[in-house]
Length: 131
Image (cartoon, rainbow, N blue to C red; front, side):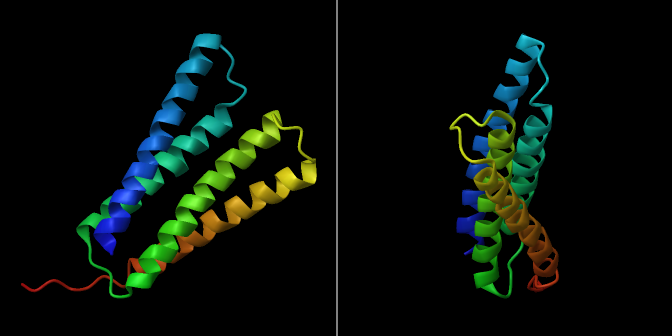
């Protein structure tokens, strides 16, 4: 279970990495840094945190396998929800109602927070290795 989710998380992180670096190079080329907070969250949450979770699951075996799936889903949906919610809040490219965007933003952020809290719990549920 950990190996499957490890690869999924790393692939997801790689997609966020390319989006974040593309945004950064575009902002630098345009000399317009208005989307800097979104760029930062894409790289820190979507790339760095999700990648670190993927590596953790590659290295360790977790006692309660279902928690790995729950954590990974919360983390990926939360990262996607938070960063896309931030993007929509700042640009509103689809002319959505502001309340809808705020809910999207908050749900994504809340799921991400739950993912981080669950990860703390999971780090204490690592199976001990034979010497």
